Amino acid sequence: IYLQRNPGTEDPVNNGLMAFVGGGHYVHGHASGMNIELYGKGHVLGVDAGKGRYRTDIHENYYRLFAAHNTVISNGASASSGGWVNLGMEQLELVDMEPMPERAAVSPNHSFSTTRFHDRHNLVAPALQERTLAVIRTSPTTGYYVDIYRSRSDTRGQFHDYLYHNIGESLEFTGTPEGFNLTPDPDRFQGNADLPWKQNQRFRHPGWHFFEDVETSASTDEPVRARFETKALGADTRFMDVFMNKGSDRSYTRAMAPPSINSPGYKNKPTPTLVVRQEGEAWSNPFALVFAPSREGVSSGVQSVDSLSEEGEFRGFVVDSTVDGQSIRQYVLILENEDSSYSSENPAISLAGHFGVITVDNDGNLISLYLGSGKSLQYGETRVETGNDSEAAFMVSSQAL
Image (cartoon, rainbow, N blue to C red):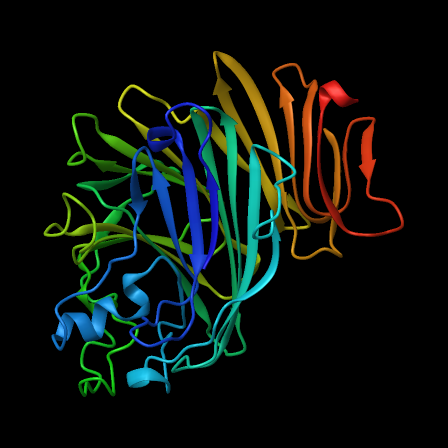
C-alpha cells in the first residue's frame, strides 16, 4: 500500500485529503488488482467492498475478486492463480512517488504515486497496467484527486474496464455529450456467472456478475461528468464529482454493486458503481479522472476540467477552481515516464519528466510550479531546471521568483 495524506490546516477530519493505491498477494488477501480508496469530507467515499461471510458464494466470487475493488479489469477476465487458496496475484511495483515514505514533502499542496501491475493470471491474455494517483490541495478546505490508469494487453480485440465504487444512494451523469443516454444492459457482466466454482480453489472471475440494475451508454468520444450522492453519513449530504477525459470507443455503465461491508450507514445497502469501458488499448489515451469530494453547502472548489493532448495522446488536465472567491487554473501534466516531454505555445508551458502542476491566477499570473518528478518545468518565461540532466522534485512559488 502507498498512502498519501494531506490533512490541511482547518478541521482535518472534514477537510483532509487521503488516498492509497495497493495490491499484492498474502494470506487472507484479496485478488484486488491495483486498487484505490478515496477519502472525502469525513469518510472513505471511494471504498473497497470489504468481506462477506466466509464460504458463501458472494464472498468467494465477489468480495475477494477484482470486481469488488476500484481497479481495471482487462478483457473481462482479470483473475488470480496460485498462492493462498488460489488468490495469488502479482504485487504492484512502485515506479515513482513524492514524497517518498518517511521523507519530507517538497510541497504542502501536492503529492503523487505511480505504480505498475502485471495482470499475469488474466484468463484471456496478460495485461500490463500503470497508475498515477495524485492529491492536489487548493486551499485549507478544498482540493481534488487525479487518477490516471493505463492498461494494455497483447491480444486482438482487447478491452479494458475502469471500476469505481462510491458509497451512497445514487450515481447520476451530470455533464454529458448530446445524445448520451443509458439503456438497460442486464447481460453485460454475466459472461462469467456460470464458470466453475470450487470453494477456496476455483472462482468465477472477475466477479462482476453480482452487479444489478446495469445501464450502459453508447460509445462516445466526448468527456463525461458524473456525481455520486451520499446521504446517510450525517445531517449533510456528501458528494463525489467525477470528471472523465474524452476517449475514442468508450462507453459508460451505471450499476449497483453489493454492499460495502465496512462502510458506516451502508453495510446493508447496494453500492453505486461506475464502469468505463475502453475498446482497444488504454495506454496512449488512459483512463483519466478527477475526483472532487464536497458536502452540502461546502464546495470542492472545482468548476471545470478539460484535457490536454498532443498528437491525439493524453498529456494532462486543465482544472479551473474557485478558492476564497478567486479563480485559479492548474495545468496538471502527467506524462508516461521521466524521459517524456510535452510543450505547448498557448499558453507557453512545458514539462520534461513525469508529473508536474502549474498554478496560475485568473489573469494568468504564475502562482507556483510543482515538479513531482522530472528535469524541468516551464510557464511563460519562467523555467526551472534541476541541472545536470538529473531528475528531482521541487516546489517554487511566485514569491520566490
